[in-house]
Length: 288
Image 1 (tube, rainbow, N blue to C red):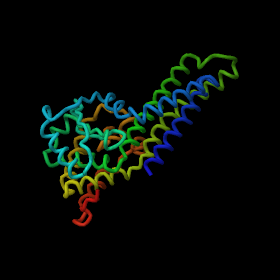
Image 2: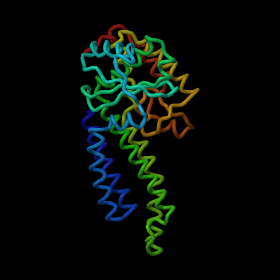
Image 3: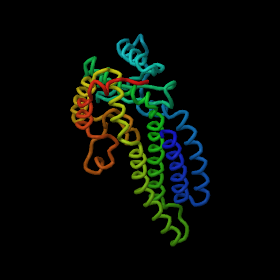
């Protein structure tokens, strides 16, 4: 299913880039956009993890620089029977974490310095187990590709804005008017398309990763407690994240009004906690 979703998203990106390219520069713009789409498809598959880590200025850590963090992830990797992900730390007071990479053999888990301060050891391990759940369920590729795609679409929206400001490729009045309408449409539709692409990453993946993390821990309470703390912390301070990568994090790093809630990529934290605490001993049996 995730392979199908990845293919559909890559096809959607190609089509959207071509349409926007045509609105920006006619036939030549469409050809440039097609080449750009091919490059984006390739880079988002092979290098999406590096792109996302660079966007957040994440720094790698090893056993020597973060021994306790390394030990926890190593223990979880053994329980999950998958290779140990590489570890990165983001210098940010906001408390959050995410996983990225194209498969379990190339997985990365990144945490903020803020989350290391807010959570106790057991809660932090619960969060790491959740991120390990994303790796085990093989949905980190599609999340990473979506982040790259949303960033590209946002860039195109900015290009349309600048093109409109500088005349949108002045030709005769009728053609200029039509081109301006196309640019305005791009400015409006492109960010909405980016949000819809993120929503294509089903919010159920967070519930599934929660359940997988609880099974790895053999206890849902540490993750439930961590989610409550992270939700409270997110109301006090926001991560320096962009809408393009918001869906990757364990809790939504962005807060806003009703429109942002409408396009939220995360299910309500209280519902996640409720489901975790409703897990019985039978449902905590881990199958790998």
